[in-house]
View 1: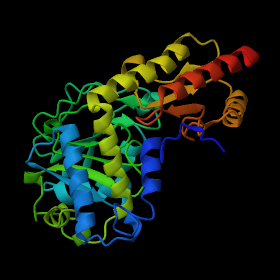
View 2: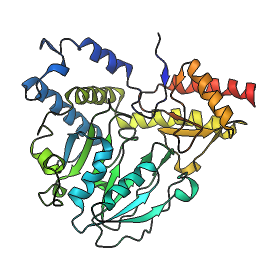
View 3: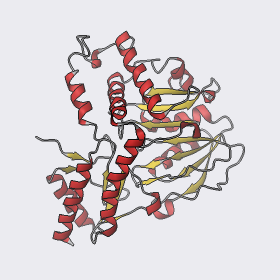
View 4: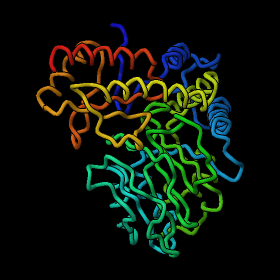
Length: 360
């Protein structure tokens, strides 16, 4: 069986080179006589793996020394609770709702304090990013929260909100390492790795040191205190060792490819091929306002549910898999993360043209 073009939103496509390397090392990692899967997280060999992964990530993003990098478990969904637990000193925070995941984080925050909806694009099925230049932010808000790239709806902040001096917390799960970012604009940046970086099971959090304290909400579990994790260099308990090892390999691959500015160019080029076709197609159309389009997730529809289903089925048979849109949007969605080759997007567009001729 040859490999398919996998357009899944996550768990998603990984660089083939990384998978081959991991396969070569499966039984014997660098002469240790065992797989990384079997290795103690307290061993010298594993300690090098996790430290190197952190250093490579710091290099890629130019992370300053006053930010901690944590490799955590529990997915972004658990982090929705960790944010208020660790940051809600005044029990009040502002949330900008641009999709399902921002909404879920907002609901979770309500358990711990007053979560205020600062802006929302729910009125148009989250197909745009609201104007965030002058939000009703008050001085007693502990932080302002965004989901920077919306996997389901295919929108992306091109300009960060004006937080009026409040800490910005950003979930970057689906745009992580797809382009350069200035970490110093944020108090906390975090994301699940299963979209652009590695296998599901790891959340990477980059947190400014002054925000990591013992002053957390009463009842916060030991494991969910950022200080517990930071003081122990992400090794307080057994971390998802193998998954972190794969993330480390992806970081090395990204460095070898030329870093994040090169990835951004590649991603823009891939996205342009697909968006240009959608903009002139007689059958397919994109669902997002042009200026807010994501480079990573491209939702599109034919306007006819039966035709959508037919397209997804025929595409899968032709080797283009996981194109079905999220149930809340319907239609199709092509996720074109870093590891998706340009040829995959070109061939998808070719297939769409053919489908259009036969069905328009």
